[in-house]
Length: 518
Image (tube, rainbow, N blue to C red; front, side):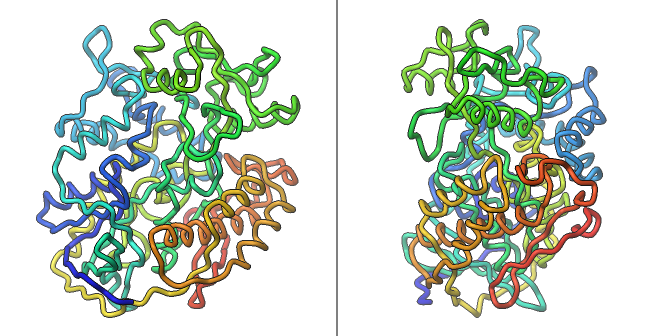
């Protein structure tokens, strides 16, 4: 691989969203030379699009124990209790740090931070900014910190040494392929939403971190648990990133109804429309099949001051020709959040020396089989900070990339992968569909290096393969993984399925208990 430029750093952060920039700031404050790589621009992140808010325990009327309980229930038996307690307990300090950076959260009439309730939460503990623009405010505050970011730069491969671990990253930028020598790399690349034809994720959410980690020798777990957000603005034939209709809309009183005006969730769950996301998405999917339609409706007409409380959603609806104050909002589930990912502890360590992960790309044990609403920004802030601190452990270690080879990797075009996964590994799966997807994924031709599109297609292909392998091995329905041919939850399968890449580049699965995965 011809290398046209080189650089050095103590820590390379791959990804410019909440987890990446929080980690970069923490490491910089401890004297590390940090270089953050971002494929796109300053706001081309999933963080930018987060609407609902940040789940954080409210003083006096809430408790860590209550938040932990709600998280564990949503996670359907696969959360790591110690990880949940650790991350939830760090919420208030994380918000304090973000506020110190200048982030401004919405206030109630009493002058205190306003809180709303979302699905799966037993109380109002979700803080928000700009009504429904929390992610944009978080991104703005972190961008304003002025940390050095190399925009338009995609990580192509993490280079490691069998003895000493991470040596650096091969990077593709507008200057061509380059090498950044560094003893530590933090993956904060976000999720895998672009595996599917419709997603709430931006175009750059192509599972880069999962593919990079597997290639570097790290373990991935719980990757079959993809959360489909139940209420995404529906448009006939709409593909790509679709506008999210935040769960907070239901938290403020909106109701889900089908095309005949009947409640979608009545009798499904005690919390009705505010049940955990996997429950609501499956209820909608069942109603769609039963009525042979492609969407249901969200009735938000009873919410006073809707446009002021939800300005972003209002704008999206109006752009689609819908006035949410007088009309029903058409909605349907779409790919939203990657609950599993690169296996780490609560400080971001993976099993590869010098390789860290934080945010959506990581599997800390917080989310289990289904993420509780608004725990994502919380995790990005808390674990991002800790991972940046952890990277300081390797400060002063000499690292040098001597191998600039990019291996040929399996690659299908994005559109083909999206169609395969949408048809065969969506909200509801079965053996026939998963087998069909797997047969086409393993037959994908291998290609050498290319442009950013080629890198993204490769990442999508290998991650789709990992997801289908895990989904095929999980012979039950749990959390946001639903098998129509195995509709019950099995106590025997109350474990994580981990995946690694062997020396020949093939993916292998193993079934392990939660304790052994860590």
